[in-house]
Amino acid sequence: MEESRTYLKNIAIPPKKLRFYLSSVKKMSPSNAMEHLFYGRQKAARILYQAVKSAISNAKLSLKVSDDLLDFKVLTIEEGQRLKRYRPGSRGSPKPVVKRKSHIKIVLVAKTKPKLEIKKEINGTKS
Image (tube, rainbow, N blue to C red; front, side):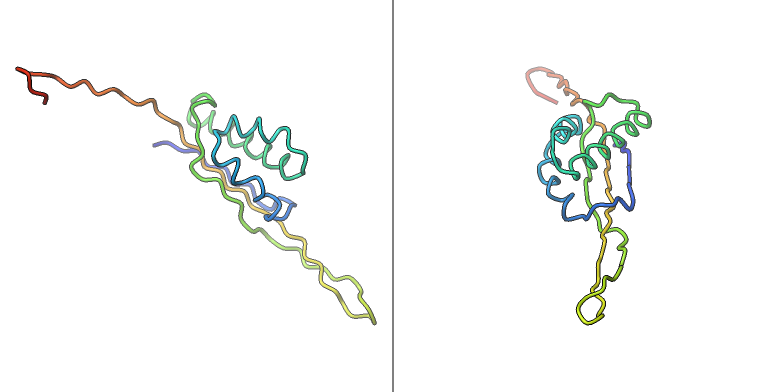
């Protein structure tokens, strides 16, 4: 089965915020997921929308199929790099600030239409 991989690295949003949409989007087809994410109000919905849109366009070019024949094989949100900074706290002590980033991994596969098997009957027996 042919597949198309899209891997987006170091997106400036924490993975916990992106994973909020993950369970609902995984169950849908990519074109339905784009429609669902388009109307999301959070920043995470906009970022996932752009990621799925990019994955669909990559798959259309590489697999040469229409977007309604695509399906998610893998859709994961992974931990990216962390920016570690410090802010001054009480009595001059440093308070850590961690800015998390995300990696989005999308693998799309092309659905194939099921082929009907034609069974031949010879003298009333199936073979």
